[in-house]
Length: 434
Image (spheres, rainbow, N blue to C red):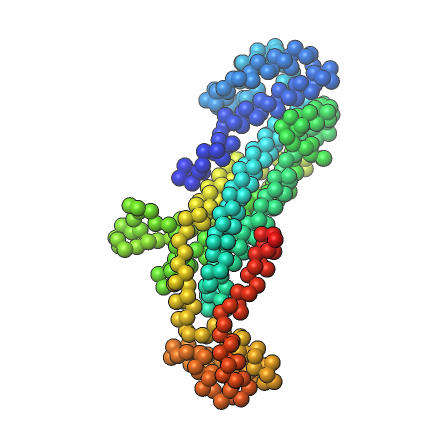
C-alpha cells in the first residue's frame, strides 16, 4: 500500500527483511528438529544459528534470484554465504518451497491479525464511551432516509459497538483459521521429512500443524480470512456512511472534528467536508476487493500450482495494511466526533409531532377502531403536516373521528417522548452487559 494509508507496525510485517527473517527461522527450527531425530549432524544445525543476528541483504537475494528465477533458492544461497556452504548443506532437507512460503505467509497473517484485533478493541472502547455519553441524547431514527420514530444517539453508537464486537469474534476466528503451518515436503506426504519436524517448527512459531496439506496449505483457510476482513471493512463503511449523513448541512446532527488551520475546500472557505469518513468508504472498497481473488485461490490444480501466489503477494499486505489504517482512522473519528443535540431535536420537530403517528394508530385500534379506519384517520392528518407544516397533535384534536375514539387527554399522552426511550437501559445491558 502507499504510505498515505499505511501504519509502520503493520507495514513492517510485510517488509522483505521480515519475510526473510521468518524464512530463516523456519529453516533453522527445522534443522534443530532433524538433528533431534538424528537425521542431520547436531553441529550442522547449530551452525545455521550463526546467522541469527544477520541482517539479510535483500538486494543480494534479489541479485541471486535474477539468475535462479526462484526466490527460495536465492534465499538459501544467501544463507549459505553467511553460514558456510558445507555447514548449510542440510538446510531445507526434505522440504519444498511451499513449506517455507506458506508457513511464513500464515505467520505474517497471524501477526497482522494481532494488530487488527488490537485495532478493533480500541475502536470498541471508543464506541462504548460515546454510547454511554449519549445514552439519553434523543434523535430521530430514519428508515429509507425518512423520519421514522425517536431513538437516541447512544443507541446508534451501541449498535455499531455490537456490530464491531461481532467482528472482533470473527477476527479471532479468522486468526485461528490461518494459524497453521506445513513442513510436509513435496505433495505433502512427509516422504522425505518426518512429521515431527513439522510439529517442532509449528510449535516454535506459534502455529498448529496443518492436518493434511498437499504441497500447499489449503486456501479455503485464506478465503475465510480475507472474507472476514471484507466484512469488517463493510462495517467500517456502515459507520462512516452514518457519520457522513449526520454531517450534511441540512442535518448537522454530528460531524468530524475540524482542527485549527484545516481547510475544507480550495474554492469555498466556508466548507467543512466529511473527508475522513469519505476516505473510509473508499478504503473499505479496497479491502473488499481482496475477497473475490482469495475465494478464487481455493481451486488449485492437483497438489499445487502457483496461481494463488501472485494474488497473495498483493492482497496479503494491501488488505491488512489498509484495514489497519481504516480502523485506526475510524477510532480517531469516533473519539473526536462532534455531537449536536439541539439540532437533533430541531430536526425531529421539523414536522411537529409527526413521528408519534404509530402511537396514535395503536391507541385507536385499542379503542375499538378497525386497523384500516385507524390508519386512514392518522394518515390523513399526517399528510396535512407533510404538506402544510402544521402541528400533528392539533390536527388530531380537530378530527371528529379521532375524538370519537380518544379523549383530548389520551391524545396528549401519546406525544410523550419518554415513551420511546424507556427501554434504552435494557438494550444497553444486552449490548454491554449488566
